[in-house]
Image (cartoon, one colour):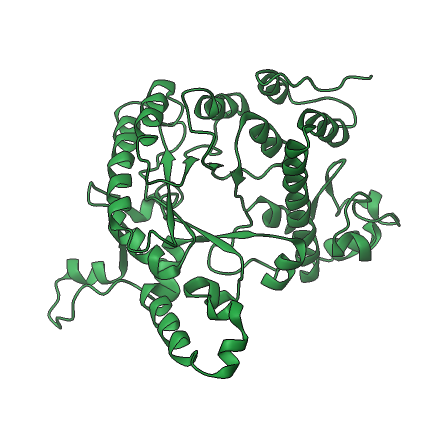
Length: 405
């Protein structure tokens, strides 16, 4: 899933995402709850519905069925809204955590804050609250209901992945309690489903406990593996993913979502381990530094060796960037730090990951997924110096990478 944190991709339009065949975007409840704010989404939906009474509105059946964030950003596909739990780690200095929920200080100057009273003689504490956003499980779901996400993530208590001891236990068990509150708070369960999130950092016993409990919540339409991709080793990473997807873990019949994963090799290993969904800002972030994902590995277009390269960015890719521009041109605009470079590379990187995962789905359906994984790794690592963690992970599901050197 491409990440449109604040209702917009950096340098890529929703029309371009549709061209690539993107089917779902991610938005962030914390940021959208602050700006434009919950009430803005409700008012936008009210006004849109009030205006849809003439022949012109009836003719546009697609937009007539779009509410909230879909209508706001003009996106016809699906939307997953993250609960804001990740900001417990990324904005820890701005957060206060209690059983009630999380209170964040606004990073947007108070715009879109939750109103907490109108007294002119408010105390300093009340004034501070007015410039903050309280995210209880109920608040998070209420805001997500207003935003209109098709998939809503529960608010979870997220700790840094390398945290150990009582704080990890507290966070994992609190996340389960918050899941129950999130499910109870959903006012639109017919159209908006909730995913539960497995926590537990690197504590395997705690992860097992969380898995055992979370799968009892049959109201969840899917489950996520949370708290990873935050500084752990790749070996630790894949073992936790494997734990969550193996027998006794998350059910096969419901979507399994590994949060924050975006490197191509990570995605391929996780699919092999049984994961279905991913999100990450990596595709666009790395593009802004002149890096492109290709079928033969990641390349840095600012390097001089591409200055006279007349080849397309990736001969195996059929995206607009690869069909139109040479590596030499992309080198020139990356070297001059032209703003269009980030747009062209973001477009390609997103298209690359969409095609990679679409190809994996097709290979699974056609019974050739093992070969698909082998071909990916042999092309992505032409020297066949495969990461050992990937080799070890794939062997647990009986996939041996090719070795011809």
